[in-house]
Amino acid sequence: MDIKKIKLFVERAVANISRFGTTDVDVFNRPFEIGLLKNNQTKNDIVTKISERIKLAYDQQNIEFLELKPISHVLVPKKDFFDFRKCALVDIIDEIIFLTLVLLVAKEIEKSRINKRENILFSYRVNLDKAEDGYIFDPKYNFTEFRNAVRKKSKLKENNIMISCDISNFYDRLNLHRLENNLLSIKSTDGKIVKLINDILLFWSERDSYGLPVGSNASRILAEAALIEVDEFLKNQRIKFCRFVDDYRIFTADASDAHRVLSLLVEKLSKTGLFLNLNKTKIEDISMLFEDSVEFSAKKTEFTNTDENKTIDEKITSEIIRGYSGLIPLKFRKLTQKTIDGLQNQNIDDIKAKLARGTTIEADLLLLFFKSVVAQNSYQHLEDASTILQKFPQFIPYFIDIINKYKESIEKNTIEKIQINIFDWFKNNGFTEYLFIYIIRLYDPSNLTEKSILLDFFRGLKRNVGNYIGRAILELIDGNLSRSEALEIREYYKRSDLLEKRLIIKIMIEVLPKEELKPFFKNILMTERDLFIINLNKTIR
Image 1 (tube, one colour):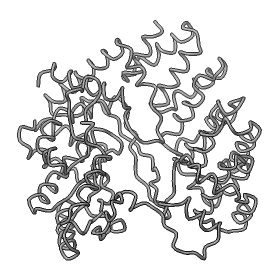
Image 2 (tube, helix red, strand yellow):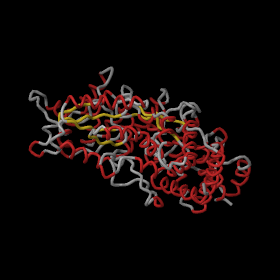
Image 3 (cartoon, one colour):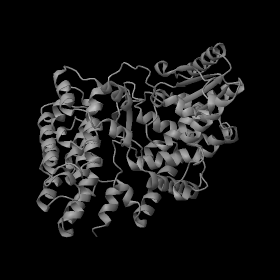
Image 4 (cartoon, helix red, strand yellow):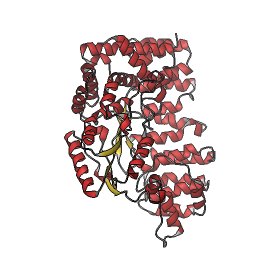
């Protein structure tokens, strides 16, 4: 393959990552390395070096020339109670390489999918017309359009039944060898590129033969390719459906046909090593949904209270957890004025007393507590949150989101008390990595006058507690360190992983004088091959 073509696609990958980042997973911050790519010299150097690596790997059919790093993972909660997805932490250089290789075959993948005009598939339709500006997907095809298509199909007289279903652990359970065969079967696809992609995925999966890195645009394109055969099967069976990623909506005339169609889908997926999430599979009667011109979405989500014997408290509680259905929210959504008005008479002290008495806590009662606090601007009640959250720590991300969104309205001493209480609880307990990351964001320097807690976190960090925690702490204290603190952080360089090393170097460049940095860089560059560290060195010459 011509290196000019490789370089063009590396530039497209860099443009996409520069605009949208490497992942959409909230627990990961946008890496500062993306900002370095705005420097033309840095960008051109990295593009050239990556192009050379890909060319060598392509010619020799050996991914060792790519100099990839193993990936690590952070378990991030879904909305279901104790349901997680394994989110990949892929280095930005490796993500550029991965996306470049996938983009090289992306047009062929797109041509093999059901045509856009049929309005069946709405997820990640490749369009490289504006790839130089970072856009690789057709903006006309998205979840909103998927929902609109579902609405339109639901209105058709012949569609009386709708099946809602999705694939269980879709990304994690994708068989890599089947994916490779799917890609090789696509007309005009470069087999050497496909082999490199497969070798990368096998390397990252530690030869497990399953799983795509979650959060990556490259993974999204490959996931769509993995379902081409299933989509074509449904279409050839004249089954009416829409799909967004692993989320299907299937339409039939009656229940009998619905069961037949669902069986066909289950059987077809099983042959590819995939299975439906049975807990989320529904067969619904939609024949009366549009009576009196009521909108589909409204009919599906509207809460209707039919129990006249409910107390006022019960009615309000039911209203504010509409659509909750036992799910745990990660983000606090702004309250409507109607909800605010309805919560004004809630006795927050009584709710706290109920939460304190219980050995366990019901999610709806905890949700009522937090929303009542916000509705009444009574943030002092959050000082007791650490005691409450001990019984339901899965709500920590939701709680932290409230603090960060309303910190301008919360008294400074209240925030400091919350921080102290959480810290006292936290230091005596073990937490999963994602909870640790959310908790330390409570100690953002913008929320307090000193950063000692974050420094203490970093000093006491154990190397086995997680893959992203050290980097997350450094991201919070970056820009807020004195010379002596920067020198202390430098001492941790040798024991740090690559993500931490880059940020330590960035901190040193920002705080320490050039003459003090040169001897340190001279030593590390004797063995260092990381492209970002090498280019950071050039800024102090």
